[in-house]
Length: 249
Image (cartoon, rainbow, N blue to C red):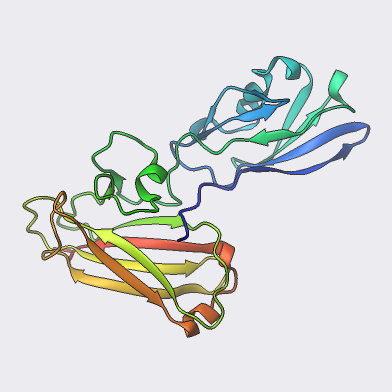
Protein backbone atom coordinates (compact mmCIF):
# COMPACT_ATOMS: atom_id res chain seq x y z
CA UNK A 1 0.00 0.00 0.00
CA UNK A 2 1.33 3.42 -0.87
CA UNK A 3 0.95 6.28 1.55
CA UNK A 4 0.13 9.94 1.24
CA UNK A 5 3.28 11.97 0.81
CA UNK A 6 4.41 14.56 3.28
CA UNK A 7 6.13 17.57 1.74
CA UNK A 8 9.53 17.03 0.17
CA UNK A 9 11.88 19.23 2.16
CA UNK A 10 15.60 18.91 1.81
CA UNK A 11 19.01 20.50 1.60
CA UNK A 12 19.57 19.89 -2.07
CA UNK A 13 23.01 21.28 -2.89
CA UNK A 14 26.28 22.04 -1.11
CA UNK A 15 29.03 24.09 -2.72
CA UNK A 16 31.22 27.16 -2.53
CA UNK A 17 30.52 30.88 -2.93
CA UNK A 18 34.02 32.24 -3.37
CA UNK A 19 35.80 30.96 -0.26
CA UNK A 20 32.58 30.30 1.73
CA UNK A 21 30.54 27.12 1.92
CA UNK A 22 26.86 27.32 1.00
CA UNK A 23 23.87 24.98 1.18
CA UNK A 24 20.61 25.22 -0.76
CA UNK A 25 17.40 24.58 1.15
CA UNK A 26 14.26 23.38 -0.69
CA UNK A 27 10.97 24.22 1.04
CA UNK A 28 8.83 23.88 -2.08
CA UNK A 29 6.05 21.72 -0.64
CA UNK A 30 5.32 23.67 2.52
CA UNK A 31 1.61 24.50 2.71
CA UNK A 32 -0.74 26.69 4.72
CA UNK A 33 -0.57 26.01 8.47
CA UNK A 34 2.58 23.89 8.07
CA UNK A 35 5.73 24.46 10.11
CA UNK A 36 9.27 23.12 9.78
CA UNK A 37 12.62 23.35 11.53
CA UNK A 38 16.24 23.38 10.42
CA UNK A 39 18.81 21.33 12.29
CA UNK A 40 22.58 21.89 12.51
CA UNK A 41 25.05 19.57 14.25
CA UNK A 42 22.15 17.66 15.87
CA UNK A 43 20.67 20.87 17.34
CA UNK A 44 17.17 21.73 16.15
CA UNK A 45 16.29 25.37 15.66
CA UNK A 46 13.01 27.17 16.32
CA UNK A 47 10.09 26.27 14.08
CA UNK A 48 9.22 28.46 11.10
CA UNK A 49 5.60 28.78 9.95
CA UNK A 50 4.39 28.90 6.36
CA UNK A 51 2.91 32.36 6.75
CA UNK A 52 6.31 33.79 7.71
CA UNK A 53 8.61 32.01 5.26
CA UNK A 54 11.10 34.51 3.86
CA UNK A 55 14.84 35.02 4.19
CA UNK A 56 14.65 36.77 7.62
CA UNK A 57 12.37 34.00 8.98
CA UNK A 58 14.73 31.27 7.79
CA UNK A 59 17.67 33.21 9.23
CA UNK A 60 15.87 33.58 12.58
CA UNK A 61 15.22 29.85 12.65
CA UNK A 62 18.89 29.14 11.99
CA UNK A 63 20.22 31.71 14.47
CA UNK A 64 18.12 30.19 17.23
CA UNK A 65 20.96 27.64 17.16
CA UNK A 66 23.84 29.12 19.17
CA UNK A 67 26.60 27.88 16.83
CA UNK A 68 25.05 29.70 13.86
CA UNK A 69 24.59 33.14 15.40
CA UNK A 70 26.48 35.58 13.19
CA UNK A 71 27.80 32.74 11.05
CA UNK A 72 25.12 32.45 8.35
CA UNK A 73 23.62 34.62 5.63
CA UNK A 74 20.32 33.62 3.99
CA UNK A 75 19.38 34.60 0.43
CA UNK A 76 15.91 34.01 -1.02
CA UNK A 77 16.23 32.37 -4.45
CA UNK A 78 12.51 31.70 -5.00
CA UNK A 79 10.02 33.35 -2.61
CA UNK A 80 8.64 30.83 -0.14
CA UNK A 81 10.41 27.95 -1.86
CA UNK A 82 14.19 28.02 -2.24
CA UNK A 83 16.89 29.60 -0.08
CA UNK A 84 20.68 29.66 -0.07
CA UNK A 85 22.42 29.52 3.29
CA UNK A 86 25.98 30.88 3.11
CA UNK A 87 28.31 30.14 6.01
CA UNK A 88 30.59 32.96 7.10
CA UNK A 89 32.92 33.76 9.96
CA UNK A 90 34.21 30.76 11.88
CA UNK A 91 32.06 28.35 9.82
CA UNK A 92 33.01 29.67 6.38
CA UNK A 93 35.03 26.58 5.49
CA UNK A 94 34.09 24.07 8.20
CA UNK A 95 30.29 24.07 8.29
CA UNK A 96 28.44 20.80 8.81
CA UNK A 97 25.36 19.82 6.81
CA UNK A 98 21.96 21.29 7.61
CA UNK A 99 18.85 19.13 7.61
CA UNK A 100 15.15 19.97 7.35
CA UNK A 101 12.49 18.25 9.41
CA UNK A 102 9.14 17.19 8.05
CA UNK A 103 6.49 19.74 8.97
CA UNK A 104 4.86 19.38 12.36
CA UNK A 105 1.56 19.70 10.52
CA UNK A 106 0.68 18.96 6.94
CA UNK A 107 -1.95 20.54 4.74
CA UNK A 108 -2.43 18.83 1.37
CA UNK A 109 -1.51 20.56 -1.89
CA UNK A 110 -4.89 22.25 -2.12
CA UNK A 111 -7.77 21.95 0.32
CA UNK A 112 -10.61 23.88 -1.26
CA UNK A 113 -13.27 24.17 1.41
CA UNK A 114 -12.21 21.05 3.29
CA UNK A 115 -11.65 21.09 7.04
CA UNK A 116 -10.43 18.59 9.58
CA UNK A 117 -13.11 16.19 10.78
CA UNK A 118 -13.80 15.20 14.37
CA UNK A 119 -10.29 16.03 15.55
CA UNK A 120 -9.36 19.62 16.34
CA UNK A 121 -6.09 19.51 14.43
CA UNK A 122 -4.61 21.05 11.31
CA UNK A 123 -2.48 18.04 10.43
CA UNK A 124 -4.38 16.66 7.44
CA UNK A 125 -1.62 14.07 6.98
CA UNK A 126 -2.57 12.40 10.27
CA UNK A 127 -6.21 12.25 9.17
CA UNK A 128 -5.60 10.91 5.66
CA UNK A 129 -2.58 8.61 5.84
CA UNK A 130 -3.68 5.17 7.04
CA UNK A 131 -2.35 1.68 6.44
CA UNK A 132 -5.53 0.29 8.02
CA UNK A 133 -8.86 2.03 7.39
CA UNK A 134 -9.96 4.07 10.41
CA UNK A 135 -13.37 5.76 10.16
CA UNK A 136 -12.83 7.68 13.41
CA UNK A 137 -10.74 10.39 11.72
CA UNK A 138 -11.43 12.09 8.41
CA UNK A 139 -11.60 15.40 6.57
CA UNK A 140 -14.86 17.19 5.76
CA UNK A 141 -16.12 18.98 2.73
CA UNK A 142 -17.88 22.12 3.90
CA UNK A 143 -21.66 22.32 3.49
CA UNK A 144 -22.39 23.02 -0.16
CA UNK A 145 -25.13 25.60 -0.50
CA UNK A 146 -26.92 27.49 -3.20
CA UNK A 147 -24.46 28.86 -5.74
CA UNK A 148 -21.53 26.82 -4.43
CA UNK A 149 -20.67 23.99 -6.77
CA UNK A 150 -17.67 22.08 -5.42
CA UNK A 151 -14.92 21.57 -2.86
CA UNK A 152 -11.63 20.03 -3.99
CA UNK A 153 -8.79 18.51 -1.97
CA UNK A 154 -5.49 17.47 -3.58
CA UNK A 155 -2.59 15.50 -2.16
CA UNK A 156 0.56 13.79 -3.38
CA UNK A 157 1.34 10.11 -3.04
CA UNK A 158 4.34 8.36 -1.55
CA UNK A 159 6.77 6.17 -3.47
CA UNK A 160 5.00 4.21 -6.20
CA UNK A 161 6.78 1.74 -8.46
CA UNK A 162 5.77 1.25 -12.07
CA UNK A 163 3.62 -1.92 -11.99
CA UNK A 164 4.36 -2.67 -15.64
CA UNK A 165 1.50 -4.29 -17.54
CA UNK A 166 -0.79 -4.45 -14.49
CA UNK A 167 -3.59 -2.28 -13.07
CA UNK A 168 -3.31 -0.03 -10.02
CA UNK A 169 -6.01 0.41 -7.35
CA UNK A 170 -6.84 3.48 -5.27
CA UNK A 171 -9.41 3.22 -2.46
CA UNK A 172 -11.10 6.14 -0.71
CA UNK A 173 -13.59 5.77 2.17
CA UNK A 174 -16.67 8.01 1.96
CA UNK A 175 -19.38 8.83 4.50
CA UNK A 176 -21.97 11.59 4.96
CA UNK A 177 -23.03 13.69 7.98
CA UNK A 178 -25.88 12.35 10.07
CA UNK A 179 -29.25 13.39 8.68
CA UNK A 180 -27.81 14.83 5.46
CA UNK A 181 -30.45 15.24 2.75
CA UNK A 182 -28.83 17.55 0.17
CA UNK A 183 -27.47 16.03 -3.02
CA UNK A 184 -23.68 15.69 -3.02
CA UNK A 185 -21.70 13.97 -5.76
CA UNK A 186 -18.19 12.70 -5.24
CA UNK A 187 -15.34 12.08 -7.69
CA UNK A 188 -11.73 10.87 -7.46
CA UNK A 189 -9.04 11.68 -10.01
CA UNK A 190 -5.50 10.40 -10.42
CA UNK A 191 -3.35 13.15 -11.94
CA UNK A 192 0.20 13.08 -13.30
CA UNK A 193 1.33 16.66 -12.68
CA UNK A 194 4.51 16.24 -14.72
CA UNK A 195 2.52 16.84 -17.91
CA UNK A 196 -0.01 14.16 -18.90
CA UNK A 197 -2.67 15.49 -16.50
CA UNK A 198 -5.67 13.32 -15.69
CA UNK A 199 -4.83 9.63 -15.83
CA UNK A 200 -8.05 8.15 -14.46
CA UNK A 201 -11.28 9.33 -12.85
CA UNK A 202 -14.16 7.79 -10.93
CA UNK A 203 -17.46 9.21 -9.68
CA UNK A 204 -20.00 7.95 -7.15
CA UNK A 205 -22.91 10.06 -8.25
CA UNK A 206 -25.20 11.24 -5.43
CA UNK A 207 -24.01 10.19 -1.96
CA UNK A 208 -27.42 10.17 -0.28
CA UNK A 209 -27.26 6.39 0.01
CA UNK A 210 -23.76 6.42 1.53
CA UNK A 211 -23.40 5.37 5.19
CA UNK A 212 -23.57 8.11 7.82
CA UNK A 213 -20.43 9.12 9.73
CA UNK A 214 -19.96 6.70 12.60
CA UNK A 215 -21.85 3.94 10.78
CA UNK A 216 -18.96 2.80 8.62
CA UNK A 217 -18.00 4.19 5.24
CA UNK A 218 -18.47 3.27 1.62
CA UNK A 219 -15.11 2.43 0.03
CA UNK A 220 -14.77 3.97 -3.41
CA UNK A 221 -12.42 1.95 -5.59
CA UNK A 222 -10.66 3.57 -8.53
CA UNK A 223 -9.04 1.01 -10.83
CA UNK A 224 -6.31 2.41 -13.07
CA UNK A 225 -6.12 0.18 -16.13
CA UNK A 226 -2.83 -1.00 -17.68
CA UNK A 227 -3.42 1.40 -20.59
CA UNK A 228 -3.85 4.29 -18.15
CA UNK A 229 -0.78 3.17 -16.18
CA UNK A 230 1.23 3.32 -19.43
CA UNK A 231 0.17 6.98 -19.80
CA UNK A 232 1.90 7.93 -16.52
CA UNK A 233 5.12 9.77 -17.32
CA UNK A 234 6.42 10.27 -13.78
CA UNK A 235 5.33 8.07 -10.86
CA UNK A 236 6.82 10.59 -8.41
CA UNK A 237 4.46 13.33 -9.68
CA UNK A 238 1.16 11.57 -9.01
CA UNK A 239 -1.57 13.39 -7.12
CA UNK A 240 -5.07 12.39 -6.03
CA UNK A 241 -7.79 15.01 -6.46
CA UNK A 242 -11.05 14.49 -4.57
CA UNK A 243 -14.08 16.63 -5.39
CA UNK A 244 -17.38 16.92 -3.54
CA UNK A 245 -19.93 18.76 -5.64
CA UNK A 246 -23.59 19.72 -5.63
CA UNK A 247 -25.86 21.23 -8.26
CA UNK A 248 -25.68 25.03 -8.47
CA UNK A 249 -29.15 26.08 -7.33
